[in-house]
Image (cartoon, rainbow, N blue to C red):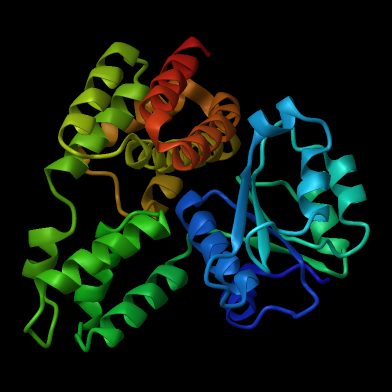
Length: 334
């Protein structure tokens, strides 16, 4: 199947190719990856009341060789539909995956992965197989704008261009979190016919947002002890660690963008101007300092570790605090 371009993913999700039995969903926006994987799961269930869903990750592959092939080749026990969702990790073997997908599998397969290079063996496999597809997930302004328009239109709420732009600046790069913020805004504006800047200021982002921002800057500054204390405060206030981890991924992505620009051109200014939402002037010096201290190479190496921790936290909520703390210590040790 031809590789799906980022601009065509929404169209693919509305009407997937009937012959498609395996989909790779990948990209730096973990919230969008998870959201689209959930959409595909519903599609593959074909309306089954309780489709059998099997979730696998590196722990499962370590416990049993060939686990993926077994799950893909066996019929469901308690339903007429079966979907296998895999969190891609180091133990996901491209050769085993290729053999398992030589023919369309009995069970539908969805693999969730972080950002993959064009020469990634798994990505190339899904782009070439006739019964598979690879869907890139990148946080783009047009995707966020479409999300705002769709949700507000469904709620019969109007918004002018300047207020819409302001809302986009206040929302993060994680689409799942952005949707949650928009839902909160719609609930707050119930009974009105138009969204205004005051509505956005009232509910989009709160003290938890500031606390999460404090956490990510503590991590990038190398203060692991302070970062772990902040994690505990966030958990005590009801903010899940996976929210903080997703924010950390966005923060390190921005740091890397600026560090890479400075490395290639000698100036970080042009990259800083492109960041949305803009870095607050009170944080600007710390941001530039952390970007230079880490450097483009170390930041690039840190991003996959953050993405892996986000995925683990999503898949095992009871252990998300432990995954977050382990990541903070691992980044400090680098």
